[in-house]
Amino acid sequence: MGLEAQRPPGAEEAPVRVALRVRPLLPKELLHGHQSCLRVEPGQGRVTLGRDRRFGFPVVLDEDAGQEAVYQACVQPLLEAFFQGFNATVFAYGQTGSGKTYTMGEASVGE
Image (cartoon, rainbow, N blue to C red; front, side, top):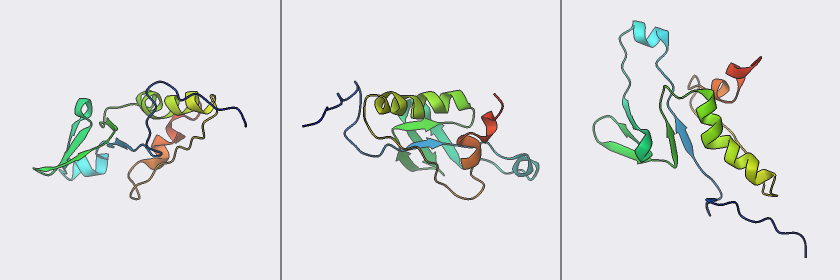
């Protein structure tokens, strides 16, 4: 019989929570006239790919979301749960060049 951590308010039963962060177009992409193929509905937790392919996520952050917004939405709740005895892991997954390194903290080095 060990100590049992109390589940923090609002904690989900799912062991994995997925957040989507859309990176802005790169200067090179803008120079070539590329346009985003995603429409983001952050308040709804949805993105639309093309005209009608909709996908839902617990957290959706658009291209204007800063590092602070990512931290507050994704990391801070995990840290609070961690200090109450829960295990927590944060990792970034995505295509090469999709902004994983930027999101995981290289952009905030020195801040």
